Amino acid sequence: DQGPAMDELRKTVLRLHPDLKDKSAFWKRRTSVLKVHMLLLAHLSREEIPAVLQKDLEFLLTKGQPLPGYGWLTPTVGCIELMQCMVQAVPLESKKAAHVGKSAESPAALLQLPHFDKETLRRLTRKKVKALPELQQMGGDERAKVLKECGLSASEVEDVETMLSAMPTVWVSAQCVVEAEELDDEVVLTGDIVTCRIQVMLTRPSHMAASFDPDSIKGKAALAYAPRFPAPKEESWYFLVADPATNAALAITKQNLLQAEAIGARYAANWSAKHNTPAVAAVGSNGSAPGGGKSGGGKGEAPPNPLLAGTKLDPFAANGSAEALDSSIEELGQTFELKFYAPLAPAKYDLQLLCMPDSWVGCDRAVPIKLRRTEESEALMAGGDGSNVDSDAGHEDEEGEDYESEEYGTEESGDEGSDGEASDDD
Image (cartoon, rainbow, N blue to C red; front, side, top):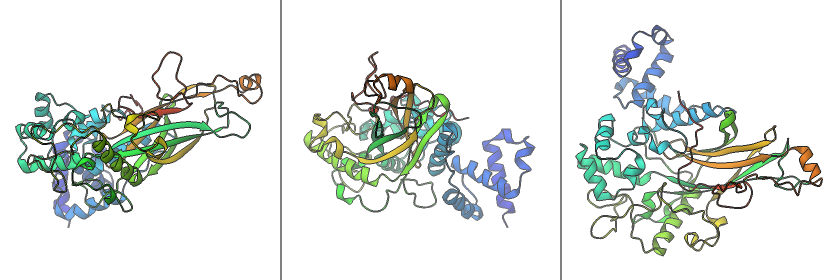
């Protein structure tokens, strides 16, 4: 009988959300619907669930993954963000102030860490740590000291370090082209199919541990570190081409980035060797890296990991860059394509490629893409085949905007500084 357990769950939900007490419409719903909603609210707040309801919670989390709202941008992003919160047990309200591309700055990114709550965040703020990147870029000893001063025990600090070492960073390069037999690629007309060619590399701090073997990345998919999730969770990523101005999701795909991670792990090892950098994976208070390896930082504080988002390093730098090491840019990353129809109205479009995991909060990336839809008459007047049209579909703007490549439609991820204001959760 689940009656007593449901009463206990109801009390928990009312304690978390006292505003629901007088909302009769919430409580008068079908029992099964009410149970699912209450279980989700309790799970997102990391509350203990009665044992008799654990199987129901497991079914909800493993079988009830929300589907992205295809066609509309805000619902699509909202569904993916709900997946992230369900996997890491993070309250939805902590995501409200975040935007794709800046999600690492939201409180939710810190709240996903083990043993973190709102009080921990308040204490971190007093230590001038307000966002996840600030915590990630600390040396291991400094971070352990700060966390202990915020009330975490040595074992709890180790749990945090384990999760930080597993958190992914994606490096993305995107190029939009038009494949048409009689038209120059630079001309985008009504009815044209635009192809967004995407190149991705994924790195984790654990890749730079002294004991890490890049060849160990095998299998069907990487498993996310999700201690609050009741079953092993395969890590997947959503890539969508978005037009924030019209709230449109033009194309979307779900990808397994195991190949991108294998390439990223080799890149991390090569980068470390080229720069004579010791292994600097996130380490615990005892100086050991995940997997039992030592931090390799030598005496004193280990340096921050250079392959974290927000650093100046960009694996997709121009050909010939010293950071490209011995691999060509074409070889640095897993590749795939997204196709979408060109916009109807002739205009300049500021599109975005949004890269969002389903298992992590604060690891999103927004890559700007500029596209110009050309007037058909303009293309004809330019010579019939449109080869002389001055299209700036991804070209560097005359105003001097900083774009990496002079080829049309090419953008690179760089730092996670793009506004990416595609998400406006309510």
